[in-house]
Length: 398
Image 1 (cartoon, rainbow, N blue to C red):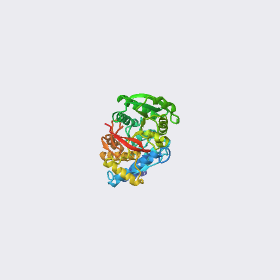
Image 2: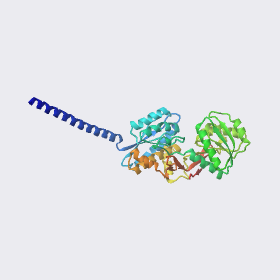
Image 3: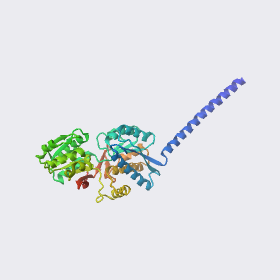
Image 4: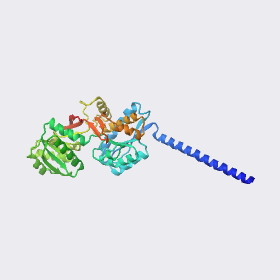
């Protein structure tokens, strides 16, 4: 009996010890996990950069990153947010879609970012967005203008000027300010951007009762446009709506001038490159291109002037472009949403970001529609003068 009682007592003590060890061990593990989590965030709020520092899209990515770093510095110099500093976590996907998805995963799972700014291109943004959406991390593109981006989910945003906003505004300007009544429309049929932009321009032309007197198709990579120019020159259009890219645009206008046409060309930011002037020379003088931002120091507001001056000071006097400005605004939009939410939890500040209305950034005023698509104003209309892009005018968007 004594042995039995002793055995029962020992068994009870062993089981109790095991239970206590299990509870205590779990508590220690939980505390350790919480400690690790706190250490990962620390005194910083991490925002990831998704973009290219090398490869074909590097010009977009490098400028976006410059703007992001400038915003982080301004926020941190002013005391940070919620008692924390902003930290930009940067990677380089090398302009590759597959690497873009890998970088997105790393930023979320390894670096524990609360938001991602990028990608400046539509293709990589669309590849990265489902990953951000699944993990409930805000992704705000500072460049993607194509379709099917924000539709991916309610954590996906962008702060760039959309063609659907710009094309109607510019068309109205051409009609009311420049007196254009009839135009020729040129589309690159193997370029989705061009095909989509032509559709938007045609809708806007119809709404403004402007006549399309000639339509011609080209292909990206074409170098001879004699036939297309011959087909439109006798129609005597007031201007040429060219929806393709800068290489073909420059060559097209060279042929137009060769055949004696006087009309100037207008297009979207697919024409926004110094290559336009290299390919077209004097033939592209007077050509107009719209975009979401241009450094117009004479007309800039106080916030934009300060940004331009700071950028010039850090970049040997060079002026910022729309990618640097939109990268800056992207970080500032996220920071303001975190402040409004009183939390850096994406599930909380995402809702505040979606409420953005008449927000004044360095690249313009931004309002998010219910679907998180931006309405951005003004549209910057640039003109080629003396072989350089200069601001011709700004077009307000209602």
